[in-house]
Length: 260
Image (cartoon, rainbow, N blue to C red; front, side, top):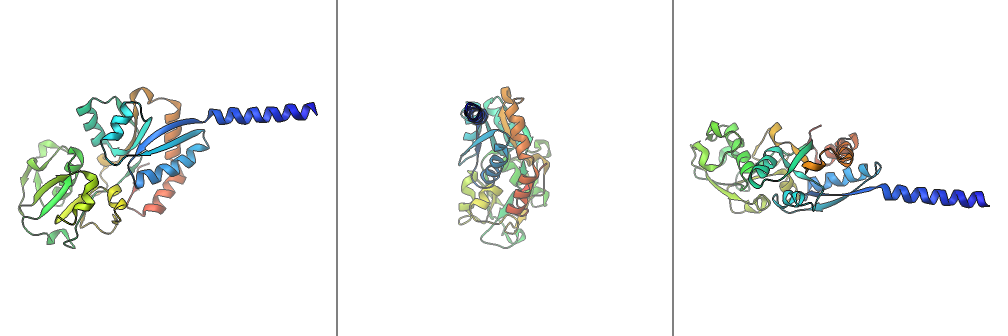
């Protein structure tokens, strides 16, 4: 009887230690695909002793501030040019630790079926943050509709347009507002996560679409002090699994592309 009691106590203690050893971390995401993918990552990471709490943010600014201030342990919502711009402008002490997925940006319209149908002087809405706004302009430039100052690289805005044959008018809006702007504009450049959330189909609906540009692959960011922490390695390992890759492919059917 004593042996059975001792064994039972040992098992109970073992379970308690196992449960206590699970490390809880908070990860910030934007609604839509990033949140959906992290739910799958959470499921995979649980088996490796990582308990992920997912917090959704409705814009692109707050997740980096929250990470820098210690309110989050990591975030997963942005591409490298955006992170670099935020770090340069706001002096955040955060770094990227892994690639995640790519969301090719699309130009959408409720007025025309193809970009060539846009009239002279058409109004096109683009994101109001410098990196995503520049990304939208580069789609047009890559397709020959405008020309941009080549010295500016990825950091371009409407003021850097050197040729605009059809005299397009560009308005800058918060990225989350762009799907709603389609009622009032001739076309709008919408990030894929917000397009999906608004019921648009990034694989079929854009009248012009970005190629799979490496600079815009999304990433996981953490505070610089945590970059070599064991939980970071576990998080990246869980994200870069065949289970997560299959989930992305089956769920988004080409609208979101894995980068590992």
